[in-house]
Length: 504
Image (cartoon, rainbow, N blue to C red; front, side, top):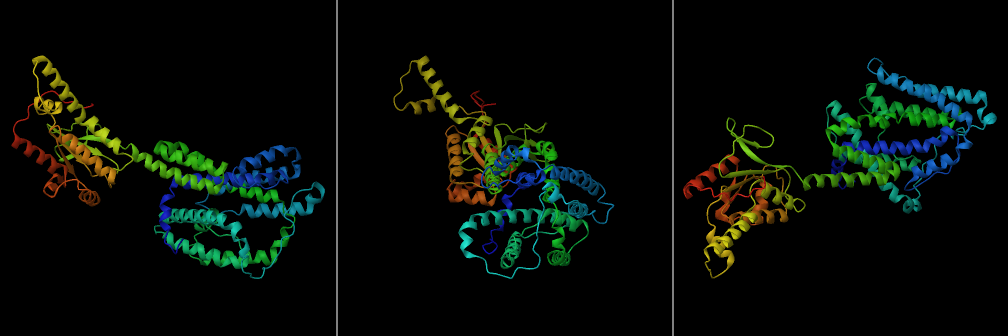
């Protein structure tokens, strides 16, 4: 991924998506550890819906709960949860967090060993833990077909978590993160250890927070961590033979509290952005109820769908002039704005492409003036006049209608503010052509203002206007409005005929 420079995929991982994914994955981890808290020996569930399947197995076998493991779990919870809260509350005063987990592990190991909990109460313990290093060995290539699909999902998830944590601390300490560089780092941290029987590598939130809070700034701290782990592998590991598995399960679940407490942020998130809250819930539920891999995929697809949905029916408004500053703003949002006589200024706040082209057209016709209804009204008036005067005309009825209904409308110019239109596709260009043709058919000119270079290039390639008509594209709304007033003054005074059929 780093070699092919696909770090840009990180932009599709929004904060709401990552937060929901972490919370959903936390439910999966909590479910996998729940059986250890009860001392149950259950088969491990895999695939879609493994969380639901595991809880079904737990409730079916809950009568087989090991009382010793359950009591130990409750005692550990009573110690760890308040200690975590105290660490969080006094983190500014403490130079380093109190290692409560280490204290609990040591105390629980001693209690299990001297109390002979495994022999007396059949409590599940860690058992023999091999020490030393296994000799380096080339990976078993025959396993590739079995792990390839999972490896892709793990790599994407590992990258997502690593980049999200990197960006979180980068914002806090004022530096930037290069996504492609992170991909190279994660790749080498997995390729080289694969010859030493290591598990896959990615960033860890809990350990990163501990290091950041104790003032670690360089990779020298990683050397200290490695030396401690080396000591555990070579010397200390056998001492944990009697450690109950439920203690490790409780430690894992308690460390999920940060992700699970994100539910408290939902009311604030709902007030800020309902769409982000929906993305959070969809990603969280799919990650928890389906699987972490599918949940991440569903979250990305749904968040992209939400982006499309937002542009399908974007905001639009008519603009009025604020005379002191000579700026145009939305009439529906601001007061004391003045509209120029005979000129409608329309703003569309989204790219104009195939998804929202009908929304653009209908909104413009509704708020400014509908040329289709004007033509229909002219035809109806012509027929009524024919009937009243009993006059017979030869030729096309449309021509007769246009001949009889030639009085000017109260609107003579439509100015479209393109400042918020980021790009046009083929459908968008055709829509602008249709709008211009419809309005010109009833004697109204259409002007475009504040087009960015991308929109101007698209209009040029789409032959929106001829070479001599490029003057109909303006750099500012003020220029477009001034041009409309000058051109109308040259034609003469506009007579209002009362046939304005705007949708307002």
